[in-house]
Amino acid sequence: MLQVQSLAEISTLIDRLPVADEAIRAAALARQNSLTKPPGSLGRLEELALHWAAWRGTVQPTIKKAQALCFAGNHGICAQGVNPFPQEVTFLMVKNFEMGGAAINQLCRAAGADLQVIALDLDHPTQDFTQGPAMTEAETVAALNTGAAAVDTTADALIIGEMGIGNSTIAAALAAAVYGGTAKDYVGPGTGSDAAGIARKIAAIDKGLALHGGLGGMETLAALGGREIAAMCGAVLGARAAGIPVILDGFISTAAVSTLFKVDPRLLDHCVVGHTSAEPGHQKVLSTMGKRALLQMEMRLGEGTGAALALGIVRAALECHNGMVTYAEAGITA
Ligand SMILES: O=C(O)c1ccc[n+]([C@@H]2O[C@H](COP(=O)([O-])O)[C@@H](O)[C@H]2O)c1
Ligand SMILES: Cc1cc2nc[nH]c2cc1C
Image (cartoon, rainbow, N blue to C red; front, side, top):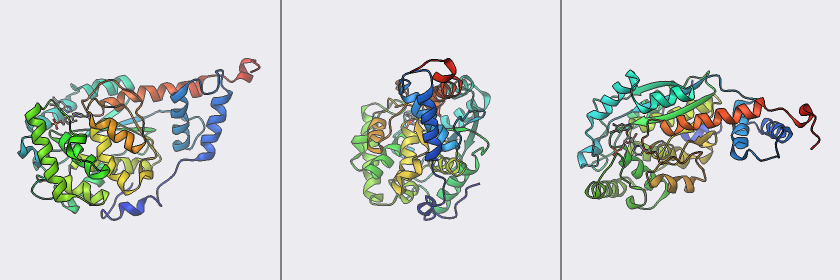
């Protein structure tokens, strides 16, 4: 199980983590090209089959077990009036997840994923990043390790998502800090902020960037925060250590792992993006990262919902990859 002692250690991880098996990818491509279809005609389904093959280290991978992790955290930045819903909603939604009543519960059942919900110290929100760093290094490392430890190393796919009132402000701040630009480039309505709310978000983010600009990826993560944000980074690293491909969800999860991208873009090579969120900053972040989401369903919920929906596409890709017959088997001369 991957665990780290310090934030500095993250920048040395890339040399110790597994990489995709390119020989297996080539063999999986050869299989795709032998199946009863014009080569390439299954488009991105073929790409997905190759991605799972290369990361699972087997030419014909299957998803026997898919894990979904939904991390929850509370944020000091809510003191700046950036959130239309009150912070207790984070706690109440965690109870809802546990009772099976939320969207993510239904979408995980539909997609065949086992959901675990991990609440991180909800009674102690992080510090308001306009006043100082959101988290200490020790708090950040603890949240990263909680995320990494939550990964089921026997799973064949991992979905990550989150719940945290106020975290659309955190995500926009992280995106601006990592990719450059101003708050306006990444801010959006989140759960439904009106124009005045969005103006408060922009003011808070600009203040945070002035206070915590120019930091490395992991220092940015600590300064702008979010325990659930750090836990998602830890889960992505934990999955990588176990050779498990990850499906990221929407704006919040992509912005979270952008701090890893800043440390080294290769840390996200095993990740695909489930959907493009309706939150406007998401497309901008994805273009900058050079990643293209699988779905565009105008969703902006979080929780892992877009990733759970995309798991169905990955399963479909592997059904074709494994279940189709070859030209030779069908007696067709191409
Ligand atoms: O991930 C997304 O694409 C996304 C876009 C908008 C909102 N959310 C969710 O909404 C919450 C944050 O919104 P807010 O307005 O409280 O900052 C948090 O619980 C997220 O899961 C998530
Ligand atoms: C009800 C509700 C559900 C959510 N799920 C993820 N973020 C959310 C925010 C709210 C407000």
